Structures are given as C-alpha cells and as structure tokens.
Length: 79
Image (cartoon, rainbow, N blue to C red; front, side, top):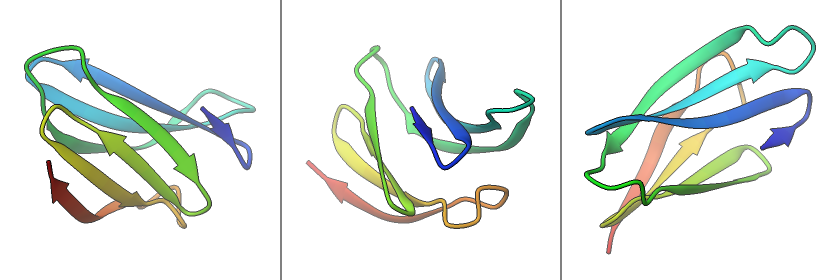
C-alpha cells in the first residue's frame, strides 16, 4: 500500500505479524512494529489518513502512522 511517499507492508513470520514502513524513493525500512500474532495467513490492512487498520483473525488493530518513523498502536478491537 502506497500513501504519501511511503510504502506500507504487512509481513508475517508466524506467529508474529509486523507492519513495516519504507520510503518509496529508496526502499529503506524506516520503521517496523509488531502488530500481533496470527496462526494463519489471514491478515489484511488498509491505510486511511494517519492510521493503518490491520485485520487479524480475532482482532482489528489500529496504528497511528502520522509520524512514519515512529508508528504506534492506538487501539484494538477484539472480534
């Protein structure tokens, strides 16, 4: 997902799931945060404004990416 000169990528190294943020112009990873654990490949995300919404198997995680070099989880909804 590309937004405002940044590429957002969800990576999985089961069971851990990470959101990585890269600069589009040089492909350097500028930040990586652990989103949670997942036992399947079921993880989707959406970037909207300053937030990334990540749907996992049993929860929705919300990360603030207003400062792409310092993202952080601001909320979680258990499903």
